[in-house]
Image 1 (cartoon, one colour):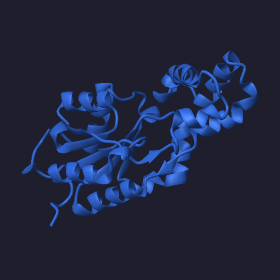
Image 2 (image 1 turned 90 degrees about the vertical axis):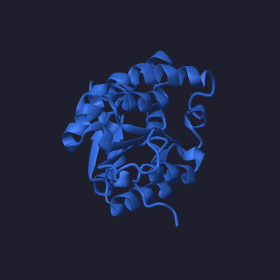
Image 3 (image 1 turned 180 degrees about the vertical axis):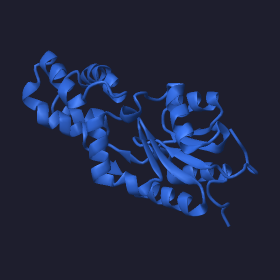
Image 4 (image 1 turned 45 degrees about the horizontal axis):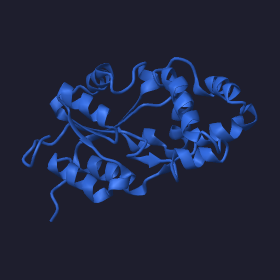
Length: 210
């Protein structure tokens, strides 16, 4: 990690889920409405099946039917897919993106998503306007924490690794970014935005507090 006195980053890369948006109540509570028993096991199976779509291989709405057939839950297709597309933006996180951009650094969305969910996010939150650039893993064909994901983003932004600050709620993604030389901080909405402001100020992405 870089301390006070760091040069201003050329760009801040923002993860989406857990950083800019979340599922109200969490995945288990939301899914329990449709899968009241073995909810966590169902989610684990679904996420394993979904994983290739995050790198652009197939579409999750198509594969979900296969998962539901295994669990005899085909009748809940619309409701369960709706959980995947149920998101609430964090107004404070969005405000901080705007503040960082106003302070000088570019801001880019750096998120693992399947194509259908990415489309919902773009329509609901207009991330294409909020950010200088958006990097959905399904479009890049590779997902975090694969180093290739970060290299593609950095190359497109024209930055060396040390010129980028990465914010993500997942430890393995942060570790992979640091291994490549990016400045990176693990943070989630649950920690509170004062913590995030501290990270941004320490890396000179926001002016120091008065």
